[in-house]
Length: 71
Image (cartoon, rainbow, N blue to C red; front, side, top):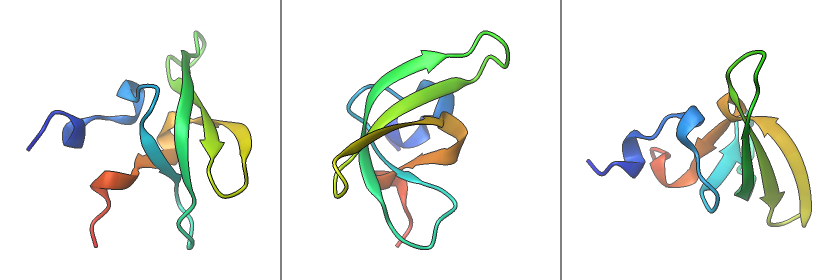
C-alpha cells in the first residue's frame, strides 16, 4: 500500500482529489488550500468542485480521497 492510500484527513495536501462524505452522489473536487484550526487542531480544506466550478471550505473529516474509494 502506498503512503497516499494511508493518508488521514489531517494530512491532505494541495492537489488531492477528494469527494464530500457522506453523500449519495459522487461530487469530485481538488484541494486548493489546507489550513489548521488552532481551537480544534483539525484541518480545514478549500476545495474547487470541478462540475460546479465553485470553491468552498470544509473540515477535512468531511472529505475523503477519491482514489481510495472501494468500488
